[in-house]
Length: 126
Image (tube, rainbow, N blue to C red; front, side, top):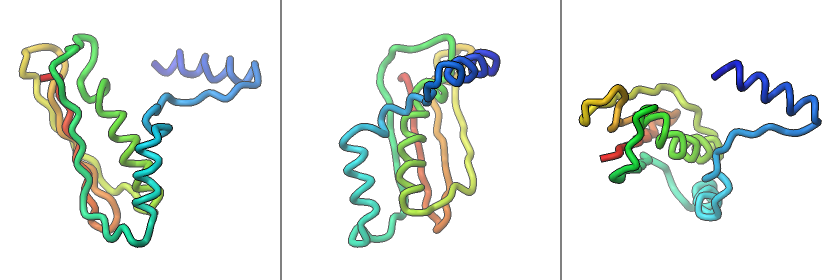
C-alpha cells in the first residue's frame, strides 16, 4: 500500500540507503545473456515475445495471479525492450476466475511496443 511504501522511502532516505524494487529476474544470468543477444545487430528484427508462467499452485486467495506471477515476466519484457529502444505503447489484460474465487486465477496480458512488436504474458495457477 502507498502509506507503507512512503514510510519505507523515508526510512531509506534517513538511513542513507537505496531502496529497490525486487525484480529479481533482471539479475539472472540467463536474462542478462538474452539481453546481450537481443542487443546484437545480428539478432535480427524482433516480432513478438511470448511468456508463459503456469503451474498448479500454490493457489493464493489474497491476490490475483496478475499481481502474483505476471510482474516477473513484465519486468523482463520491459528490460529487453528498453535495451533495444522500443517504447511501450499499449497494454490490455483479461483474466478469469475459473476456481470461483474473489481474484483471477488465469490471465493474459498483451503489450504493444513501437515497431509493431507484441508481447503476450500468460499466467495461471491452474
